[in-house]
Length: 299
Image (spheres, helix red, strand yellow):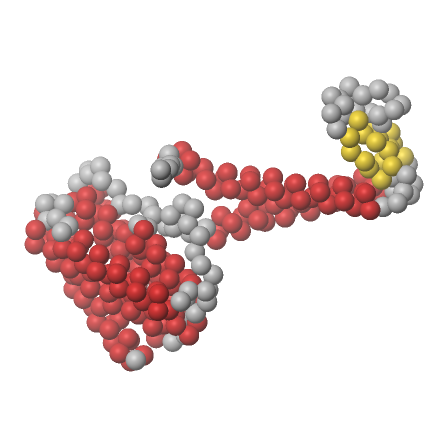
């Protein structure tokens, strides 16, 4: 029996925080293991620390005396038998170690949040660059395109159009960012830059129209399964295959978008959004022409 669990909005919004805390906890555990291992490896006299509940003990090696020595006693322990004597140099080393651990944890946390793209589905793990099979990627993309065409042809409601148009834009922007970084051909990099700008503006215009008409329909915040798969194929593509894979996706994606715009402009249920779709169609056609020209030149 299959089991599924849908994240609540509270969990989705706080996922980066949970992930950050989890990383810090893992780092702290690793640091603690290192301290214990180092202590056991040093053949010197040790002083035991007995916990209040006497459930566990930790062994701490005494370093050679350096400077003033300070004795501290832990709450709930018996005086004289459960004390820990630390030298100045040992306390300094412990402080430095804690600071380094905290700094490393903060670095991991920040880098994780910066690298995690908000348009990706929660929990999605993309393949590493160069690990995808180009033949399999082509099959997946072709199947996805066939599904997309049927979906675009059937879209006539405002909710369906907003979801389809915004998701298409999200894919275009994310794919464009990847191509700006990975494309081998400078012309393809330039095309990708144009796609990022144009499709960001497209979604902004659609959002403005929805606000003006006081609609309670909001564009999706993350990619759907099909577009996520397409992005994964780009991220996992080998360098030699990337340009062709990106352009193939671009041709198919703009053909699908053109069907969506023409179809809703003709049969849509909201006049102002129908006008938006009709106005966007020539721009989509222009993008399609550019993608096809680059694909033919590359072939």
